[in-house]
Image (cartoon, rainbow, N blue to C red; front, side, top):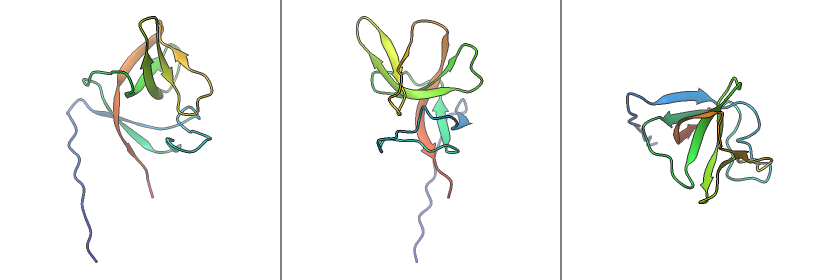
Length: 105
C-alpha cells in the first residue's frame, strides 16, 4: 500500500479556528463545513469577491465564516447555510481569508 503525505506551508501569520455554530453548515449539501473542522485563515491575503472569509462581529465570541459578495452599493457575507446574509457596514473586523478546511477522522 502506498501512502501520500501532503505538506502544507502557511505564512507565519496564519491562524486557525475550530468551526462552531451553524453558519458554515449548508443544509442543502455542498459546500458545507462540518462543526469541529479547523479553518486555516491567512490574515494578510486580500479578500475579494467570492473569497471564503472569516470576520469577527462586534460582541461575538467566535468568528463568522462565509463567502464575500460585493456590489458597488454594498458588501455582505453569505453564510454557507444561506439563512441570513451578514451585511458588512460596520461593527466587524476582517480576520482573513480562509485558505483551507481540515476535517478530522
